[in-house]
Image (cartoon, rainbow, N blue to C red; front, side):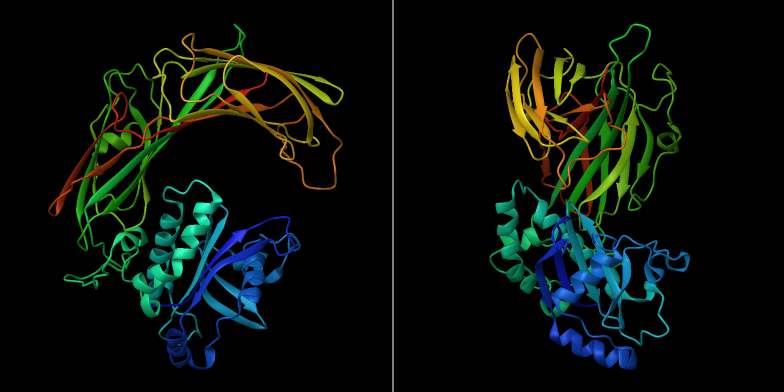
Length: 472
């Protein structure tokens, strides 16, 4: 199990190449092994330039390659995985693992220890699972606590030394790069028991389980007595388990607060080993139905090394956490906007941050803004046609705030302006982002780990909620 090369590519639409290689690493010793194993079917790893062009073309991320291509778009080439074949210099490089997350493309070429023609089944190539582990580990390292581009650049500069320790000679030893960064001496990784094929490495260090709960509340509020407001809650529980051993057993339990709304439509990660049937049968039911399963929701699992989404769920809440009124009146090249927000008294009035984003689509850049806010401050991003109302860490004592003003737009240029097929004319929306608390569990022990999380009213939750308001 080894990798021939690794790339990190930032996707930059609108630039001449539509992307930039931020990091690349090749392993010459593995390349020599590939030449021996592959024989006449061997294709060398290309330079960064040709690889970048071929990969963006295959992923349909290049501005000049939107037309139909027989080799890429025909029905006989439907790709259901993140593994691609790149046509470079008349030769086909395969297999190439590639996926995009947060505007960054992660790619690598695993070693295939046999001839490539005919193509062997993917399940028989052990380097593929290791390649995914490596890329997920790099992704988790780059965006753990990363807040701006300077921190991302700092972490990119640390990658060469980290891969030298965690992936020497192209063989992955530890997918947890953050752990290797904190370690003074890098201990060799041993495998006292058989490793599963989907888990290429093991963790060494202090046991730790990190859990975050993210909820999105989509709300349409009409401010009319004859039209009922609607809202929908969608949540995801994300976990990162840093535990020693090849197959640690973990049980994560989610408990609702008093009078909490039951979770519904629960979908779990494949690493969950068993599940109460009552959890799966709780599906889109009436919130007043006493037969709803209200927990505790226990998830026994054998976690992977990288961060993963433990479960997705929906929930019915009696009222939206924030009531809003958003009105727009159009006058030639100007828009008069009025925004009123009220925090519901049941929601804790304390945030790490809270902001409202007001985008304007299908228009030119913002040239002038006159505004009045009762609380917080307004930032204007002219080229993006975006207003950001920074509310801060809490609402005022009245729990009500307002924003009014006039926004003037310039003429549309040939440059790319924000576009949306739905937000035309008087149709638009406002987004609210806020985060309550972050929480990390520590001190797990032995081979059995049990984690308790209370989903509301406790200082043990990480949430980020999104609210949408349809224009009236």
